[in-house]
Length: 233
Image (tube, rainbow, N blue to C red; front, side):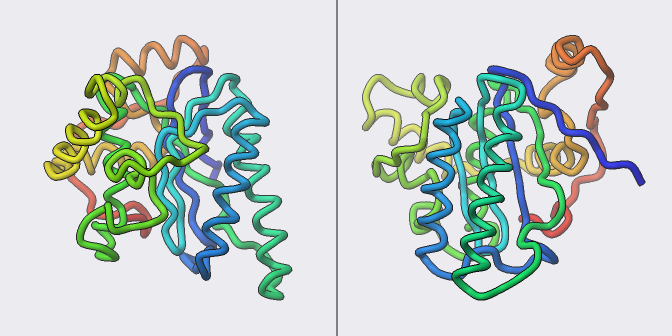
């Protein structure tokens, strides 16, 4: 069966998900999470990619990024994978692959879905029942957007900055949005688009993406909601 292609465009946010092989752990202790984020920071700077949101779960990661070049995100993921896997294999005297095949990637229409996708990412630990509130989970961008902690590698998207005139106003508005959760239709759309590497947005956005890429790429319409994406929460 042919692999589903992934698409990247300069200036267009993209939701990336990578899982541990066979849903096994890819982080074992806090040092691993911290080391992963240090690699992310270096790769983002080197390849001119902005990171808007993230969550590091025990067996998978979510990253919401905007590249300056079509190759940026691919290079970031390649760099992270190469350095992190090599270090973990040495640290724990393990061999073999760590990640499960190819990561998933879905372009995101900013105006309609950017903050929705960001909340989906940061609410992941709550859906996994790891914590009762995203603010209680350490390895997530909510620590900055909701709790006010400065995370060096994060670049808040303009839509987040537009939530208020001051950091306090933005945090308060965002905390209110987080409490509202996500509609089942939003969960369904995000998961289906990730599953197929399709853009997340309306048909107008799809048309713009296809025009920029000069090819047809597919579209997820209305359908039966799914609770999980291949084991993803």
